[in-house]
Length: 77
Picture 1: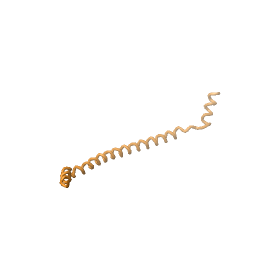
Picture 2: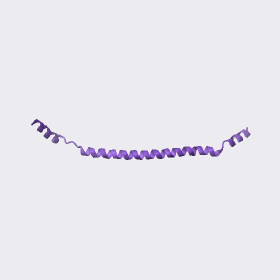
Picture 3: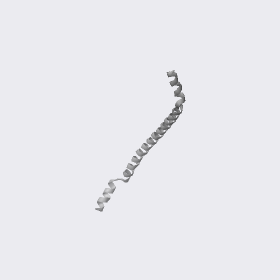
Picture 4: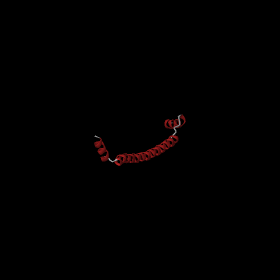
């Protein structure tokens, strides 16, 4: 049995077992880099939309009774 174990150990080279995780980690690193770029782009888009919403909200402030009263009185008169 010892001979079989030694023979099996020689058939499976150690370099290939360590190369497989390295190839897997390289693809994971590439995926992580792509996700980081996408995340940065989405954060930038969100910030632009937040600023635009803030700008337009400040630009369209509706007055309460003072602005609506002259229009109603002008229409009824």
